[in-house]
Every structure is written in structure tokens, then in C-alpha cells.
Image (cartoon, rainbow over all chains, first blue to last red; front, side, top):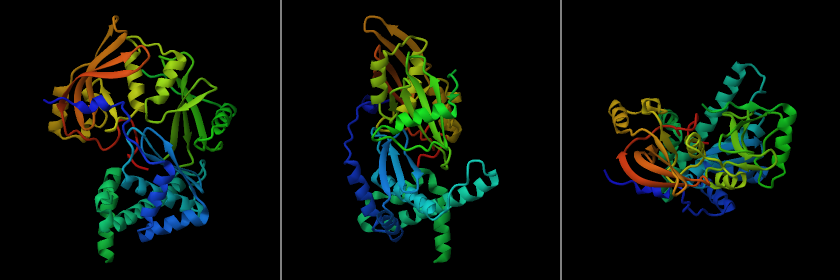
Length: 171
Length: 208
């Protein structure tokens, strides 16, 4: 079989990324093109939500406070712009839930309460990500971003299928 | 076997969080909902691996740091923090701890094509059962067992074996210098089209 030259580049950080504020601004700009995304972008400016990028081994998002969100990924293997936008949509929706008073139960709350509230919050967040992905995916200008494919790669294939089925039913 | 995590008590945890919050770019952790624990690493004298977990989020959010108790360097997915501590702490590598070092390194450093995974036993490979029966057999039959040797002339450990990277199985020799720096040699692509639904190092979906 052929050689695997990609391994040679394993430790060579050849990817140059735009500054953090440019990535964040651009992602908010893209969100603004979708109705649900625009609602999130407005939420950021009205509530002065601070969005920060952190360096983490795996792609992740984090909401330590209602007005502070983090998006994390490795600089060696940055997430695609489409994934960055969808990660931002998801964590901003979570921030919206928190500011609206829909919070995770206290650590010592009964397991059932955790299941009920946290699952509802997660479902709402994923539904929102599906909506934003579909709205942006329908726009020719974002054709190459392939938002739906990216959502599937993020592990939401089943959720997206359910979402699309429900949307067809409602149409 | 890896050493287990030692959980810090409330006061010790707060001391760590206070130290971390002093950094300009520190990631915010709440004192009420964060557990801090550490475990030793067999190749360092003074530095340990610290793990911070915020239990107030769903799923929980965690970050790792290398620390001597005073200075904290976050694990960021690149080799930089590890190489920095290797130099500061004077990493000690031998034939017994070079594999744990590679495991630690690959768990915390991604390549441009994602995770790299050193396969010790293909039958115990994470998520092997997510592959088709045919692919599982190919993985097992392509596998080359790990071999560790020390090249005294070049002062490097040579680890030959099978690696999962970028959707393929690759046989390669990893050269590990006495400073803990890695280089790859004698690479040969054994198998392609191996894609796992999760990172082999993560219990979560690859998402935010």
C-alpha cells in the first residue's frame, strides 16, 4: 500500500486562523442571515454577551455564566467555519435559556429533575441548531458550507432526521 | 495501569481556582460546582496532571492543566504545553514509561486530521464494534504489535507499531527524543476508510 505522508505533518501546525474577534464577528454575521440566527445575534448585542474562543483538545462549548460563552477547539485541527457557526448557535441558545430562567437543576436535585430539565434544555438547543442549519443551508450564498452535513458530523444526524420529518409534517 | 485521580478538598480546590483566575485568559470555573483532582505522570518529577470538572453544565465541562502547584499550563490540543513542561521539568523517559508518555501525548494533542491513537491490542480498541465485521477483521489482521527499543547512539526511543490516524491504520516508527519530542519514520498505510463516530479519547459526541 502507499505511504501515509499525512502523519509527517502531525505536529506541524500549518493552519493560520483569523484573529478570534474576526472569527466571532464573521460567525455572528452568518447567523444574521437566518431568522433564528438573527434572533441569537440580537440577543448577543442586547444582552452584551461575551463570546470567547478557548484552546481545547476536542471541539467543545461552555457556558460558565449566562453572559459568558466559550467555543473551544484545537489550533492543530480547527473546526470548520460551518461547525463554528453551529457551535455558536447552540451555546448562545443555552445562554438564552439561562437568562430566561431555565437553568440546570441544583447539583443535589433529584435525578428525575435533572433528567427532565436538562433533557428539555438539550432538546431545545438541538432543535435550534437544526433550525439555524436548515435556514442557512437553504441559502445559495452558503452552499459550500454544507451546514446539514456538518450538523450530522457533530453527532446530530438522528435529531436532524426527526426535525426534518416534523417540519415536513407541519408544512 | 494509569494512576488514579486524587480529588482535592474544598480549600485546596479553591486555592487552585484562585491561582488560575489570576491569568488574563483563564477559562472561568465556578468555585461551587467545580471539582479539582490530579494524578501523577511517570515521566515528570515536579509536574502533575490537573483536571477541573464543572458539574453545573450538561454535559459536564472539563479542562486539563499541567502544574507544579504554582504554575498552570492548560492542555490545548497542541504539543506546545507538553514540550514546554518537558523542558522545564526535565522529562525522564525510559523503556517502561515511553508508551505511557505517548498515550498521554496523543490523548492531548491532535493532528491536522484529528486524533492519533496508538493501538496496543486491536481487539480492545475503542469503538471497534462500530465498524463492519469485514473492517474489524481487517483491523485485526493488519495490526503490527508494539515494539520499544532504545537507540543509544541517537539518544532516542524507537516505538514501532500500528497507529490510527485520519481514518486509516498506519504502521510507523515513532522516534521519541530524550526531550520528549516526536518524529515519525517508516510509515506505511495499512488500511483506509476506518471512521469512528466519536473521538477515541472522548466519551462525548464531537460537538459543542
